[in-house]
Amino acid sequence: MSVYNIPKTENVFKKIQDNSVDFVEFWFVNIFGELHSLSIPSYSLNEDHFKSGLQKLDASSIKGFKSVDDSDLLLMPDISTFRILPPYYDNGSRQNACVFADIYDKKDQTISRFSKDSRSILAKTRDELKKFGIDEARFGPEIEFFIFDSLKMIPSASNAISSSGTIGYSIKSMEAPWSQEDTSIDLKGGYYMAKPKDTMDIVRKDICDDLHQYFGIKVEAHHHEVATSGQCEINVQHNEMLAMADSVISIKNMVKVKAKQMGKVATFMPKPIYGDNASAMHTHHSFSSNNENLLYDPNDQVAALSQTARYYIGGILEHAEALCAISNPTTNSYKRLVPGFEAPVGICWGLSNRTAAIRIPKVFDDDKNKKRLEYRVPDATANIYLLEAALVLAGLDGIKRKLDPGSPVEESAYRMTSERRRNYNIRFLPSTLKEALDALKSDKKFLQDVFTDEFLDTYTAIKYDEYSLFAQSPTVWEVAMYSSL
Image (tube, rainbow, N blue to C red):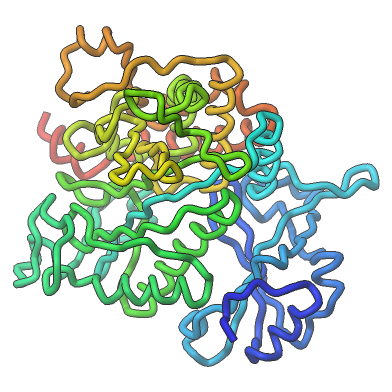
C-alpha cells in the first residue's frame, strides 16, 4: 500500500491503524509561514477531531494572530493532506503522521475561516480567479537553500542582538574555499557540480526520495547551485496552488529535519555568504480554463503569449515594489537583490533574461502546456501561501485594468545606461525591507479583496519592528569600517 494515497474521511483511522501511527501532528503556519504543530496520540483521537475540529489553539501565543483577551481558535484538519512521516521525524522510535489544519474563529455565534489563516487567504484567492473565468492557477517553485556542516553565532545569538563583545558567525562546510579540503568549491563555482565536490548529492537524493514516498511530491530535478558551501536546489513538478503551498511547507520542514538528523544545519536564509550567490525561490506560474493554458497564443510572434498573459504580467510589474514586502520579507533578502549575482534588480520582463523580474522561459518542443512565466524576485523566507495569493491578485489587477507591460527587455538590466532604462520604463526593486513595507503601505488596494486591513496592518507593523531592530544593531562590518574614525 502506498503511504501517500490520499485517505477518505471514513478510512483515516484505518490508515492510522495500518501504519501503526503513534502520534498525529496537526500542522499550520503563522502569518510569516513558520510551521507550528500540535501532536495528539492516536489512542486519544476520535472522529469528532476530524469532523468538528480541535478546540486547542491559544492564538495569543502565535505572533500576529490575536490578543490574550480573545484568543480561542479552532483547528479543522484538512483530511486530504494526511501523510505518514518518515521514521527519522522521531529518531525511528515512534511512527508519526501529519495533517494540515485550517483555522476557524467564532464571532457572534458564527464560525468562519480565521482572517489571518494563510491557507484561508489562498483559498479566497482561488475564488477570485473564478470571477475572471480562470479555473486553476498552478505554481512550480525552484527551492534553493544551504546545508552547512555547522552554523554558529559568536559568541551567542542573544549577544549578537543586544550586548557588547565580539559579534559574528561561523560557517563550516567541506565545500567552503576556506575549509582547505579537497572538496572545496570556489565562490560562484558550484553550479551543477558533480561528486565528490558536491558533498550534498546523497542528502538531496534522500530528501527527494522521501518527498515522493511520504508526501507524494513529484521532484523534477535536483542539483548543486552556484554558491559554494552546500547550496542546493530542488525543483518540483508544478501543481495547483494550494497543494503546492502545502508542499513547499513540507519540503522546507523535511530539509531542516533531515539535515539536523545528519548532524548538519539547513538554512533558507537568502544571503549567508558575502561575495557569493544567494538562495532564491524562482516561482514558475501558469493558469488555465477548461484545461487550456491561458498564457499561450501561437499567433504572438514575440513570446507566444496571449493578451491576457501580457496584462497579467503588467499587473505583477505594476505592484512589484509592494509585492517585495511579501516575496522578500527579511532584511537579509535585500542583500540578494543586488547586481552581479543572477538576481533581478530591475522591474521589467524578458525572454530567457535572468536579470529581469519576470522571465518567459524558452519552450524547445513548442508544448503549449509548458508556456509559463517565472517570477525571479522571491526567496524562500516568504510565506508561500501569501506569495502565491499576492502574485495572483496583482496579475488579476493587471487583467482588470488592462495594464500593458511594455516590450520585453533582452539585455542585461544591470549594465543598461540610465537613458536606456528610461526608454524601457524600468524601475528598481526596493533596496531595503523598509522600502518594500513603505511600498505595500501605499499600494495595498489590489490585495484588499482577500487580505484584510487588519492582516496587512499586523504584518507590516511586525516587519517594521524587525527592520528597526536590524537598523539599530551594530555589525562586524561597521565596527571594522568606522571604529578608527
